[in-house]
Length: 121
Image 1: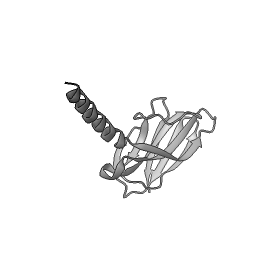
Image 2: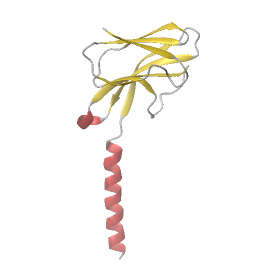
Image 3: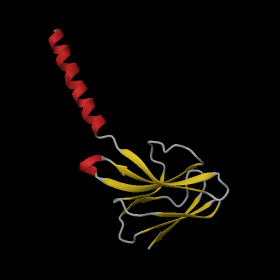
Image 4: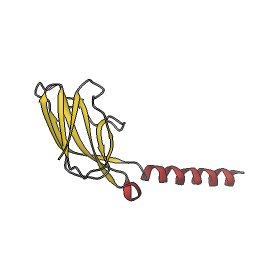
């Protein structure tokens, strides 16, 4: 019986290690503070390994806040392409990106009420 428990524990450990290896990582490329300093537009690259590849995303966060490992993005693009974040007022953000980029998701307003304008170039 103890051998069966050890085998089960080893299998579970191997399965969990496989899940951990699939965890995505985020690398901040740019942090642009709003004119009043209340928010930051955070452009980051998300890498989920060879199977899923890399993407680029933008989140609007309270100034200086760490990028959470939760879906908080206002723009997600399927490939790592350059994105320019420009504040046009303390509560309006313009995001420009290559017209050829594949948009995976976008939100016209952040959870904190910042209006987002999308400008493919």
